[in-house]
Image 1 (cartoon, one colour):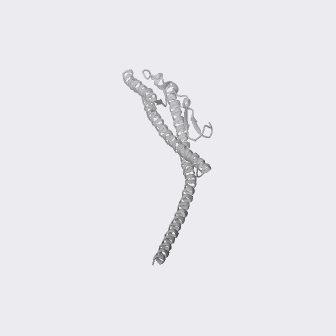
Image 2: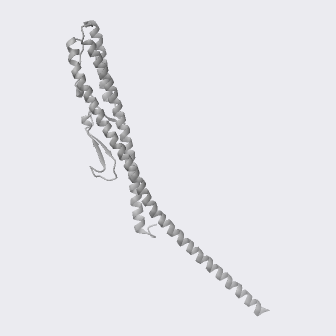
Image 3: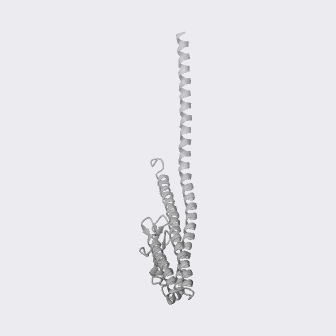
Length: 239
């Protein structure tokens, strides 16, 4: 308690606050990794759709298919475009959309203070937008051979863009993983330091208690011996 060691208590309470804050920062980093995995999963599926679109583009670009067949291919293309856009808009973490560009940046509080560089990781989400417009494939149309042929270069660029975004997310996930490792070590060290202070107080209190018990027992024994001697003396006088 404060009356016994005010300075020690203040240090211990400060360390305890740092331990709990560090633990929450570690949770934030782990949640950040889960958030990144959700975004990466959405991009993976969009990438699969782009691969399918390119496959259909190769088919529709050839005169081995007629206009009727090309129309059927174009119907699938429009459905794939709609699905890709839907994924970009529904890939969320809680209520936060991850791939539609509505959030310019994501902040991950991974430190116990308010230093922008040391305690926070900021991810520029504006660079990771996977809508059709951002990927440059909004106007894909395979109803004509020329449209299918021109789409191939657009799809290659879109695929490169998706790969770049996935690479950005992978780098962020690796950084967050390193952060969690460091936070675990920090939490262990802070907990150990706090335990040493607390254990020292307990040890001192235990030693004081033992010392007082010994003194009390010695005093009780001396009092009992004195009472016994008085009783003997009284018996001699009366006898």
